[in-house]
Image (cartoon, rainbow over all chains, first blue to last red; front, side, top):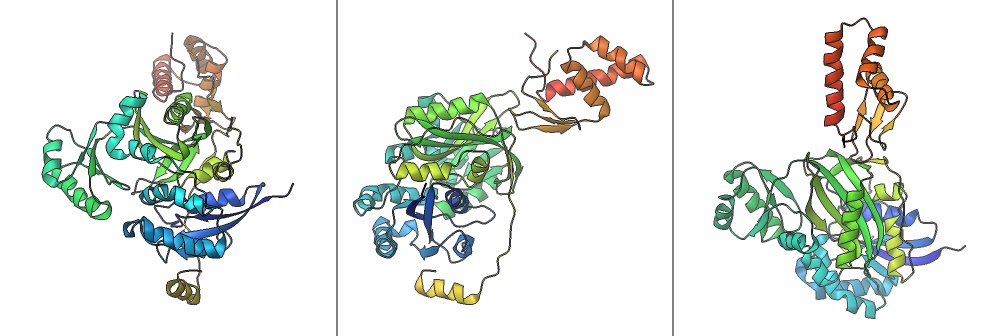
Length: 348
Length: 82
């Protein structure tokens, strides 16, 4: 059977200590026996490692930051499309999803497909809306609230016990043991990601995550739960293992089915020693540890590409339990002329 | 007392709980006790067998055995008694 030729643009090439999902997504696509993909990297920073991984990424273009607005982004994507004839884009950053969702129709008109949640779905699962989300879909979430100023946070903390989690609008979370610490994190997070900052009850327990894929019609196409085994100081999994917990599968199914979620999703959860499950966050995209799911038998990026191309995908029914991933760092040697070409022309 | 059905044991004493992702390594004695529990032996039968195999007084044996069984429970390896 000949493999389907497809040109896919992928963001999230920042394969650093807090990695974006781009490279593992590309690895899944590259390992597909059904796809013959040309991979176009879309990068925000000149030193995103994926740009220089030439065995995985065929060509990379610099794109403007989301803060520059969706019209600037759209113009740049059209320039790239003229050269590369993109079939689809897989955005992998929370912060850029709003723009891509807004551009969905305009991109589709130009022949560029995406497979994203609706704006309503995207906003409903936002960190600041999580308590309402939990109530609506019958999921336990930690007590939390959004704050817009230090004074606001001070008032909120009066009714909470330390430690608390202080979370950025899009990324980063810190455990604070005092108001002074919380105030310090508030400044850091608000300057990086804007307002609001979310203050959340700290739940002690084991961190488990689920990667899931929904088809937008209420079907759970893929679902692999993972327990974090090694966590970095940024809270990222550096090692993890697939687990078999029916409660996690049921939770993912309930959320995907009831929200009719379209696209990739990551559920971040804590299981307490009393066996209670708390939903900490829903990330509206494939997570950076997705290569574990691929290794365990569910090639989620390949399934996402097929769904995006309008093909029918049969839901996965199994995966290997007890499969582990161990992340590592690796130094590439890059000639200066590659870097200079990228910085001067915006492509490589 | 029963070990949960889905708990995986290997001959070299490695234990994996697929529900939680926890893994443990057991020494030779722990392994023996686990396999006896899996065979359906009672605590007193296990105690008798261990006393025959090891040079240990009953008080010490019972203390270690109770601690070990408590650990199995704490680590979620035992089926909850109905």
